[in-house]
Length: 109
Image (cartoon, rainbow, N blue to C red; front, side, top):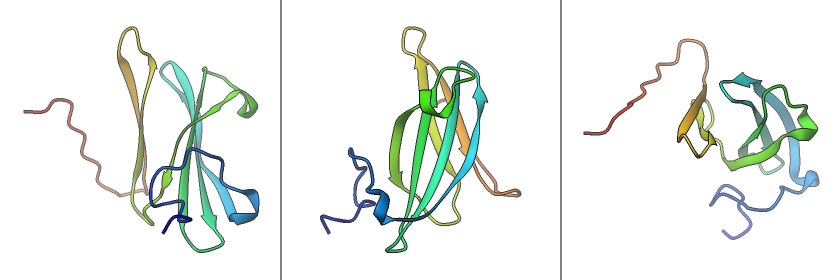
């Protein structure tokens, strides 16, 4: 369905009138940057996750959209951000419910 925003990551902003409810699930400084996760329920019932990034201590207006994608209901979500491409160091932020098990692999074999 072409109008389904969860079918593939949209590149345009989601129209405000299509959002029924939105909440900030996480916002804080992580090594080298500030990250925020905003989750929105659309009027059609779908969920979207919007990750924003900026420099450490950034105000919301100084942050930019890093990723916009469908959000699986009740599942942990994650962002892998590389704030300094020169060093290649990345920051992994996982947002989950208390008690959820998260497994992270640091190397592939």
